[in-house]
View 1 (tube, rainbow, N blue to C red):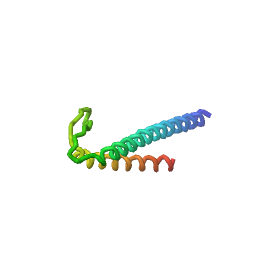
View 2: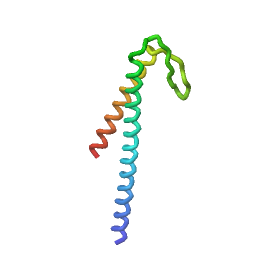
View 3: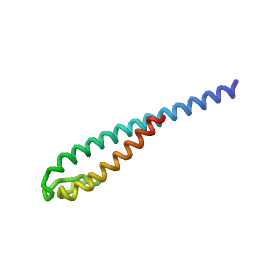
View 4: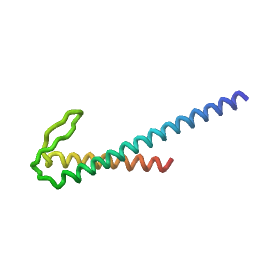
Length: 96
């Protein structure tokens, strides 16, 4: 009986561990989805601006002055990377 209880406890512990991991994945998916939408909105907003117009970008917690032509390529690269991570995690979530 005690080995059966031990096995049940191990299964319960493993179940709770997987449940927590799934919750973390779901939370990360939500965060990445928000980032993707935010990047998309900013890209759409500044794409129509003059390339030499100044804009500001947050880099490591510091607001840096740049031009649209400097920021747009970096923003598009970041957007692609975040979208890729989002798709990967979303795919993993659907598998589970």
